[in-house]
Image (tube, rainbow, N blue to C red):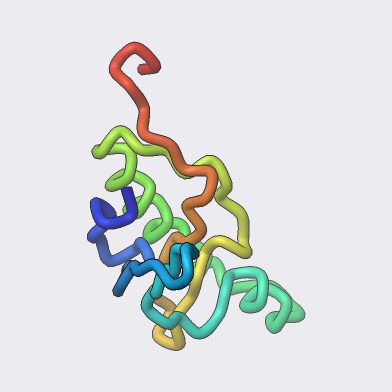
Length: 103
């Protein structure tokens, strides 16, 4: 499922392999998560930055939904933020593909 998610607002899966029976996933490095960004800003985020992050999150979710996939665990810790304020959705442990009869 993760290999299907090639979009700029979804964290990129670089590699997947097994080592001693354990599946290892290697993702691109993104500096912060949204919770860390919020905790650093004592007075809150600027409205324009909030709009910027919201737009990027919705673009990533719209892409997932176009593939009939739902995340099911959107929270600040699962939204990564680069040093250039690019937001990327991560942690797809609860994500599911919807069947036609589920829609």
